[in-house]
Length: 173
Image 1: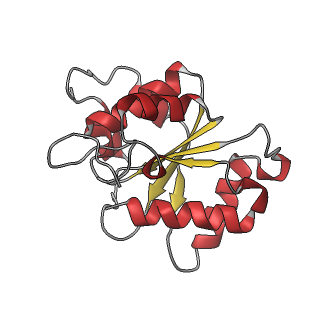
Image 2 (image 1 turned 30 degrees about the vertical axis):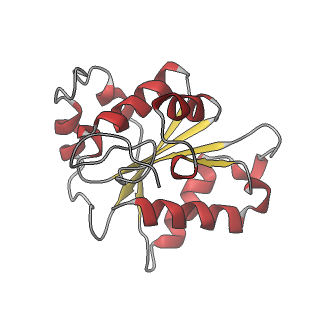
């Protein structure tokens, strides 16, 4: 379950960059309807995709990626490196991106994966490097909290912009 990881990441960003408080849209904090998911993606400048096991095989994860593409969002990839849900080889994401999931044939998902992913370490000596690179990619030194917002997506089954791996339906928190 990536939910706790993503919630912790949101908290760390807001703690390190206080101007972001109230401006980081996290799907788990919202109404779980598909329309609210779409509106959440549309309202944000960046879309952070937390790459974990089977994230690209989930219906609502694919929908959130499609909306980010449709609305021209800058997509930032965070690739979980350790613990439950971590994927050892990036090739797995390429394989998953070509699978047909609930009518989505995967077309264009390989392009999303062509952006260099940030190796994301939750603990240990590499965590600070992960956070620094994320801040750089989000241009946090230049954040205008009135106009720049950040959107998180994850593979957690209780996160709005994700799907429940057991049944493929969005779940409320």
